[in-house]
Structure formats: C-alpha cells, structure tokens
Length: 598
Image 1 (cartoon, helix red, strand yellow):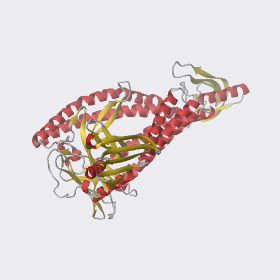
Image 2 (image 1 turned 90 degrees about the vertical axis):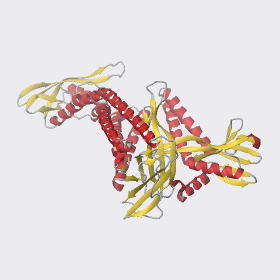
Image 3 (image 1 turned 45 degrees about the horizontal axis):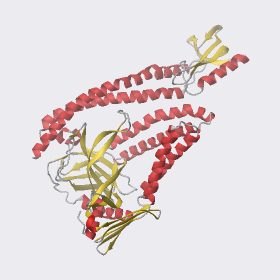
Image 4 (image 1 turned 45 degrees about the vertical axis):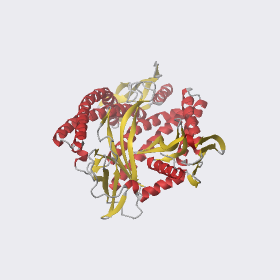
C-alpha cells in the first residue's frame, strides 16, 4: 500500500512537471511586454538623462540674453494637460556669438511638478527686464548649451516607476519562468533516479538538513521595500509641493500614507536581515525522514546562538495546506491567492542544552488519510510546513520550514514525547480557555460564562482599522472627493467598527444540564438573544470552525462549541476558542460534566 501511494504521488509529480513546463513558456511570453516597457524606459529615458546631467556638470557658466521664452500647454484627452518650455537666448564664447534653444536637460512635455512653470517664469522675467541669465556651455563644443541643468528627481522617479515595476516584474517573471523550466527538467531526471522515494528528488530535502524560509523572507522584504520606495518617495517628492500650495489635504494624506508604508517595509526588511544574521542558518533534521502520514513527524533544530535556559519555551505548528485562486470581484481577472488548511497540529517542543546553545525537538502524531507533500490538487500542490516560534517575547524567534511528509507509516526512533501532550502545551490551552470563559460545575451539568472583552486585542484591531477607514471616508467626502471614496471607505470602516464593537461588548451565559440548555447573549448588559432547549431535543455536542486570522506565517483558526439539535439546527455554547486543541479541550470538559455525546 505504501509503495502504491508513493507511485501515485510520483505519477502526480511527473504530471505536475509536465504542466510546469507549459506554464513556464506561458509565463515567459506574458513577461515580454512588461520587460520591454521597463527596459525601453531605462534605455530611452533614464540613462540618457543621467548621462546628460553628468556631462553638463563640467560645462562652463556664461551670461546670456533671453530673446524669447514661453510656457507651452499641451491639452490631453485623458491624462490632463502637459507642459513644456520654448526658449531662445544668445551668448558669447571667446568673442563668438551663439544662439541656444535648449531650456533644460529634458525637453519633452510632462506635468510632473512645477519645474516648467518656474523655468518659464524665470526666463520671461529676464526677457522683460533685460537681465542676463546664466547658461551652461560645452567647452569643447560651444554651440551646445542649456539654460537649466538641474536633475529633476520627480521626473526621474516617475520614470523609474516604469523601470522598476514593469521592468522588475517582467524580468522577474522571465527569470522565474526560466527557473521553473530548468528546475522542472532537473526534477524529472531526479525522480527517475530515486524510484519510490520521491522526496529525494527535492534538493532542499535530500540531505535531511532542511533550511528555513528566512532567507526568502529577507529577499522578499527588501524587494517590497525597494519597489515601494521607488514608487512612493519620488511621487511624494514631486507631488507634495503642489498639493501643499493648493491645500489639497486629501492628496497630502495619501502621500503621507505611501511614505509611512514605505518606511514600515524598510523597517521590516532591516529587522528580518538582523534576525537572519543573529541566528545564522538554522536547519531542521527530521526523525523519521521523511515525516510520516499515519505515523510521526518529528525533528530537531540546533540554536548555537541561544544559550540554554530552563524557562525557554517554543511552540510548534505542523500544517498541511494548499494554495488556490478565488474571485474577488465581478471581473474574471479579479482573483486572489488564498491558502486552504487541510490539517493542523500544535504542541510545545522540548528544549535541551546543546554545547553552548540549545536544541529544540518535537514530535507530533499525524492521522492516516491526509495528502502527501507535492500531491497535486487542481493547479496547485499540497505543502507540509513546520512553524517553530519562541513564546518568550525577548527572544522573538520564528522560523518556517517546508518539510517532506509521505504515507510511510514510520515512527520516530528517538523522539519519544508527543508535543501535543507536553505539559507546557496543556498549560497553554488551560490559560487560553480561562482567558475567554469561566466554567462552573452545577448539579448534572455545567454553567459557562464568556465575559465582555474576550480576545480584546483582536477586537481592538478591528476597531482601530475600522475607525481609520471610516475617518478616511468621511474626510474624503468632506474634501469633495468622488462619492466612490466616502462610500467605499466609509462603508468598509463602518462594518469593521460594528463587528469590533459587537465582538468586544457581547457576553454569553450558558447552563447545560440534565434539564436541557439555557443560553443568554447580552450586549453591554442588555438582553440581545436567549434560548431554551429541553434535554430530549439535544442530539450531541460538536465543534465548528468560525474564522481564520493570518499574521505573517501564522494562521490562527478560531472555533466554537455547539449543541447540535435533533431538528438539524445548532446552538453555540462557547466561541472565541483559539485553535482546534483548545476547542477539543472545551468540548471534552463539557461532555464529561454533562454526559451528552459528542
């Protein structure tokens, strides 16, 4: 059976490699127009400007008389008006008179900033008053001159947006398509060589020293910081003066937000880099190798830079998931990539001294019937990941590993303790239960109370974000922005505010015993809903998933405990339960105290 499962996985992998080859060609063809725009703007716009600016820094300054100067306005149908300057001036070099017509380094029309308007005003004023103006002349070719040799950072930044965004995206897609094509071919060759052990075809797994994804996080963080910075900072530099003069506070707010996001991305990149340098290359050594469906997934990780302490705590999360695309709007092109979690296990790792540092070890039981690593699902594949995090805020350690897990049925040879049953994991689940509910035994059952303000940190985030969006919408309406802005921002912000207020201000009181079920849901002490169910109508107890929150690599799923009735309906008796283990512990407590089946 194991060999059959492996052969099925290998066949699916071969099919994925073939699909990967055709997808790489499509990706590379799709990337060509983006690359052409970026490279064209670099070769025809950015580099000539920088070349002219650099050589003009060595030109000589001479006085010139302005013959004529004019600001030209070019009406556009969609992008608004653009501007340019026409100029004619005369100057002398070594007793020879010359006529100049070049007003600036860039002579094409644009509407970036107020450079052309200021230059035209200066030249026209000099013409009317007869005052000479300085121009710069090429000493080796006196007929070449320019009235203003300033490097326009706003225009340069605007052009760099096309270079970085279009060229970067296009070249990145080309490189990734080429990488997909070559890696797919190499992987097909390795699959033929490894036979029934497909995990050995992946170079990242073959040596059983699995590196974390931290290096990719560093590259991603710097990529986002650089791309966003190339867009946000030049835009703010060129548009802020005009917005300030026109008292357009909405535009100033948007520009400020762009800069703030850019600074946040820069802080993320710096922190990720420092964290990667602090701990070095961290690797996971699995036991068994590969991890086993129907058996164990266990591993050790050495941290030579973290001295051992008895109070070191590390949480471990093992997850099987796959990516899928979903539509986010009416258009077929409006899609969003999401992650579907198939199974997740949690626990606490063992920490022991190892040399001058520490060794972190864990083992989790994995049920049968789950998908294997790289098993195809639609256009995607299943991936098994391990997330190891320190629960000590001072350490701030977090690493994510992509690990091989296959249906081998193997068990660990030297990792004996189950991370899910670790005393620290049990204590953590007890603490999380106590934080959101009070359970009191009564005759024949249990009384449960969930107070106001449970999970207040998550609810506070909803309130802050909702208030920010609602305020932006109201300010946009006050400033005369199109109705779409106040409706969209105000509507989203209002909904977030209402949800945050309800989540933070409701309480739930439940009594479940031999007589049946009684519930009361209150909002700030006012009765919102109540329900009574006789014992004969209760079928069983169960847990149900409520929603999932994502923060970085961490996915937190919240559950509720429900009483399932014989008529098919359900009544919630506990909510806000963080993770399946906490929900199952609550379910076990209630079932044991009341005697109702689950």
